[in-house]
Image (tube, helix red, strand yellow):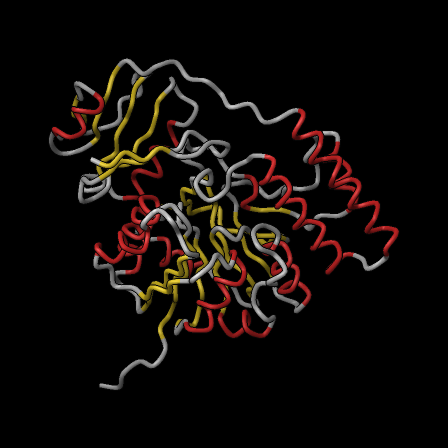
Length: 370
């Protein structure tokens, strides 16, 4: 039998100080890749939380690259991409959960003349992340942002629809490796943020279509890999300035105006920060799983076992056991029950060693080791 020299897909994950979220992500990715000729590459950006040692103890079938310093998102992904053996590259954030059929969905839905392919994203509470599909930014768009309007920034394509859009999100992005190398990968001027806008523009310039798939969803906790504070804002709008410099205009006067607008947005955002919502304390705890867990009960107190979703659940912690439910089922439940009755969603690891939770895109996630 002739040995296959090239794999179908390489999943590339850049990690930095989020070992539990990375581990849960890898659990989901490993399940999704089971029937497919593939590989996983994790490139760690010099984490200080023991991520590398923790990952090695888990015995995953993957390639691990240990950077001696934090290279940022673009450089790290480019470094891993050069070593990848897959026909397609799947760039995935470490704080994501993907369903078991996601990779199959890509191969079934990919189109001719495809540039970049990306899936619908929700956060850990089930809220749709609008950055899943965006338009190319221009001066009109950023001027509207100055007064708090997002008009024109996000694509009008329905969140559950599928079709061509301008900009896809770097948190989950699939591209043919040959095309990725042809456009010289991610622009390494960007440390974090903005690189997905420019690479979307590069594939578009080459005559390719960037395709958003709204029929399949992933969870992107987001608060783990990005924290919405003033440093986040400086990084994001600094990246926007790089984008306009590289893509939109080299006119010094126009760039000066753009820079002033971006600085004003940062200042105003600092004066009026995003408010995090407060929740009432849950008064019940439920485990959607097989059997009680003594370690969980030490943390939460009494826990009731359920084996089907109850629409009357409210003011509770709801823990999903990934040994009882598929990731696709968990994602669908969170999607369906979002914004309902003050429910906190928790995710129990398959080896019962920790649980994770995210309270939305503007807050850091919770990790409890059991």
